[in-house]
Amino acid sequence: MAQQTIIITGASDGIGAAAAHQLTENGHKVIVVGRSPQKTAAVAGKIGAPFHVADFADLAQVRSLASELTATYPRIDVLANNAGGIFGDREVTTDGYEKTFQVNHLAPFLLTYLLMATLIESNAKIIQTSSEVISEK
Ligand SMILES: NC(=O)c1ccc[n+]([C@@H]2O[C@H](COP(=O)([O-])OP(=O)(O)OC[C@H]3O[C@@H](n4cnc5c(N)ncnc54)[C@H](OP(=O)(O)O)[C@@H]3O)[C@@H](O)[C@H]2O)c1
Image 1: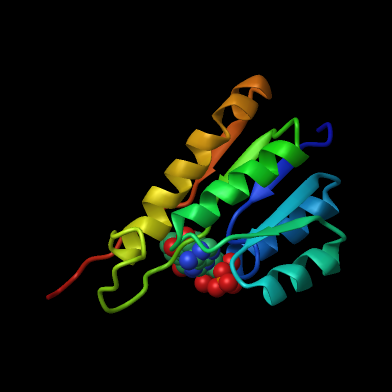
Image 2: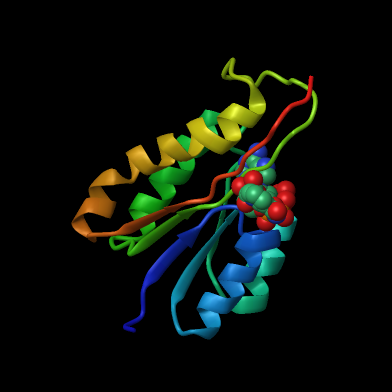
């Protein structure tokens, strides 16, 4: 397969970091996106990839991230919306939303929306990581 430009969010750890590593080994250009600057830089450094940092619990940071990505990458073949998790006790973000809902759903929706022109121009694929939680409360 020809080299693809692949943005992976939540690539500072877990599944995202493993995917970043594997896709780089397969010859693709991976852009590592994470929350922790130290962890994100470490993963990107290991695979020689560029990286960007944003905390999805703050939608202003998602907007800045989208601006950076738009300015830096005229072509995006794949956007992997992988960042997320389950954050325990109820917490409300500075944007006024429940944190797990914002980080897993609202932030990737906003990021995708803000990248839409580049994604359409690139005929990109968008991958959504999802999860299921069954509360017994
Ligand atoms: N592992 C599973 O069994 C499983 C099952 C179902 C669904 N999932 C989903 O798969 C995805 C990856 O899971 P994983 O197991 O690889 O999790 P993980 O090892 O905890 O990694 C989660 C990634 O998301 C990032 N992240 C967390 N909070 C963030 C925030 N506020 N803003 C931006 N990035 C944030 C983390 O950044 P930091 O490194 O800075 O924390 C990390 O890069 C998640 O969406 C998860 O819900 C996982």
